[in-house]
Image 1 (cartoon, rainbow, N blue to C red):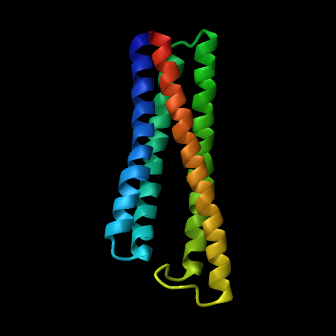
Image 2 (cartoon, rainbow, N blue to C red):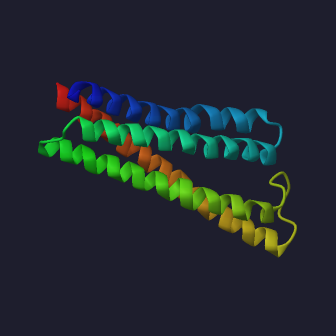
Length: 158
C-alpha cells in the first residue's frame, strides 16, 4: 500500500500544479484575449478559479492521504510533508481569503471596460488590484512549492 499511496500523492500534486499552470499560462491569456470585454473575461476567469479551487481541495485531500498512507519516515519525507502543508496553507489563503474578498469588492469597481467614474470606483479598483496581486503571488508560490514537492517526490523513489 505504501507504493500505491505514494503514487496517489504524486499524481494529485502533479494534477494540482499542472492545473494551476494551465490556468495561468493558457486559460487566462486566451480568455482575456478572446472574450471581447475585459469585464466579461474577468467574470468568466473568476468563475473558473472559484471552481478550480474545489478541484484543488479534492487534490489536496488525496495528496495528504497519500502522503500519510505512504508511511513517511525519513528527513526527506518530512520535508515533503512541510511542502505539502505549505501548499495547503497557500490554497486556504487564496481560496478562502483572497478570492472571496475579490468577489466582494468586484461589484463596487464598475465595469472594467471603462475608466472608473467615481472616487468609490477608483478606491474599489485599488483594493481589487491589491487583492489580485496577492492572488497571483499566492498561486505562483503554490506552483513553485508544488514543483519542489514533485522534485522531492522523484528523489524519494530514485
